[in-house]
Length: 307
Image 1 (cartoon, rainbow, N blue to C red):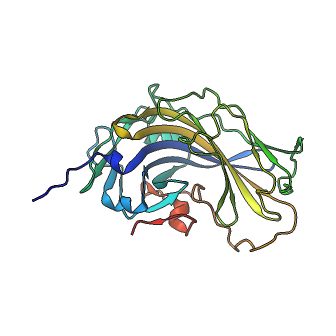
Image 2 (image 1 turned 180 degrees about the vertical axis):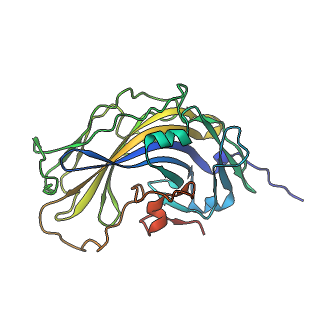
Image 3 (image 1 turned 135 degrees about the vertical axis):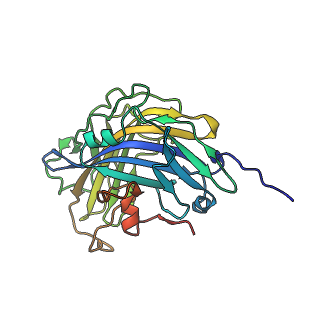
């Protein structure tokens, strides 16, 4: 009888990722309103969505026999150029988040399946320093034609849009991933219309950058958009065994804008949809880590179940 050898997780999995993540809504006055304090954990597939059916994953805290969360091959997955199985839990404050997941804690993943299996190396949610290292949250600034935008509901889509932010304090290059800046813009249909790149892409926005330009004509006239901006500190990472395993401390800011002019083509849906990277709601208190709510609650573009 032929027996297929169990291969390591790196055959099907690109990366493991755990994160402390603060989310904010930016008002048109520049003020940041906290919307959530999150612990999240995810894995990204290397190739096809259906590969998720070939294994189960479980996230463990070091020295605990029961997992924090199990990940089924039939969990809802979403895509920003990667199929990702993401789960998260909300907390009322950063202090509550730190009590539940102290920065001195370490975590590992266990993968089981007929084709792949194994245990990841442990990763530290507070890094070698054993402390929470979320970058200082701050608002974005917008400009057009060298003038500061004072009315975010009057963005001219025919003119380039400059988005600026404060320098990423203490950012540095890493052995696997550099500290990372994400910039997305999504429209009322939940489609990503502007993306600053993944950490693995050569043309991504660098952690040294303090601005990016959205080209003229990319945004449609007379429609709402949301600009998302994030700074991610890679506090710990391991790139051995053929896959990336990272611990991240980060914040994300969302800013709603609207373009001028008359809308053309298909109108926006009555209920605006969110792109899969957007955070929609706080998780239920007693349910532990939940599938990323934006994906779980509604049909999002480029998301689905492995079937």
